[in-house]
Length: 504
Ligand code: UD1
Ligand code: CA
Image: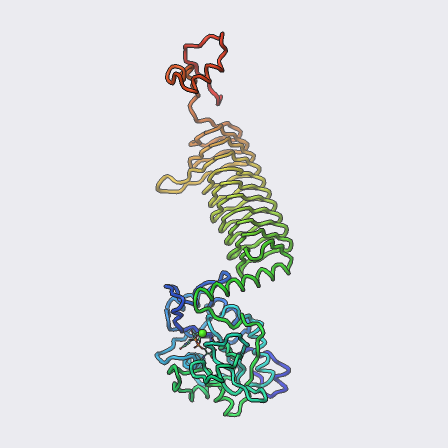
């Protein structure tokens, strides 16, 4: 730590904060959900996930999360996202002041914590690391005791109001429920996000009581106490109100989600992605897109989805954890856990399940479902089928309606098909089975035995035509009349049964 001499601070405006404390003990009952409020996702990440990301953005030496409501579920989730986070349990004393007090005690057993302590909330998902960094820079640069992030709202109802002197200096925060009508007319509100000097914060909190409209320990009382003790108290006014908005119910959650998405889509457009209809295009914060990707209307990209240059995705496509190679086309597809090679084509109406790997220039066409299948370069599964637990070589053509019968009712088995294979329509591969390179199958073949390289597999019974069956069994029907008209008037009518094989 450098000493807190003003000039030193100015030269090092962003000294790492000693800690960020994320408040997440509240109940969030207005969500009306069995899922704790801060675990609700927006932009592909829980609200607390966004908060942790912003907090880590200022590179604090410690990160504490204060929990109480649904403690175990919240704690598990936090540790999953951020194993280094310190979980702090709030006790029966209510209020944001108490939450910070218990966090300080947990981080700072010896009372020696010094430097900057940032406080933020678990339910303010649009707050960016840049905003927190700016707050810390101003706080340290100006040598403040407390710096609060504020915003000017059209409707400040419910928020704490920022009280300033005539000269503009911040004096105190008054909670809505404690405010006079004149104070309620103030439009500058407390975001609940602050940078504190650790010693000032620790000292002031020992003097915060619960004598107020809500009977809570208000963190907001620290501002007036710090000022009285001679510290500088200031505000950073944020023009972007979305960054200080929390989601208390699902209406607000959807509004924040739409705004977050609008920002993400805009960022990708400015980075070189064509988005035909931003309003119907949804992109998680975790998705990565290359320049010259095109997203058509109704496309949703989730999780660890990555799309390479010149690929075209959509319309009406939802993909989670799908990696798409350069120049590939993915049309009207629902997919997860799949890899699509460069120049490959998928869809329309295709269901890609986890473990699908399509090689370069390959194709999975209309009305196909795939799962746990590796398809080599240039191989095509063009229409109507299912391929699961299978491996297909290169430049193989799978005919219309082919199915890998991978499940025997108890176990799953693999189908292995070589390269340059040509399978005819409606082939069923009864796994475990393998088909060698360059082999063919006949239409409707049920392949139960391995097919050696270069062989033609036939399995259906020879076809038998029963002559004049219609005339004798369905006389005087339209079919019988049509058949009679088609037969030559002078021709003899064969009275015997003939057999003919179509597959030989
Ligand atoms: C608080 C501020 C208010 C500010 C508003 C911004 C106080 C006294 N008031 O009001 O000035 O305008 O936030 O949204 O600080 N929490 C705990 N433990 C508690 C109580 C709350 O961890 O005992 C957490 C909540 O989970 C939430 C955050 O603190 O993340 C804010 O709590 P909330 O009840 O929403 O505070 P407000 O009364 O709205
Ligand atoms: Ca609130």
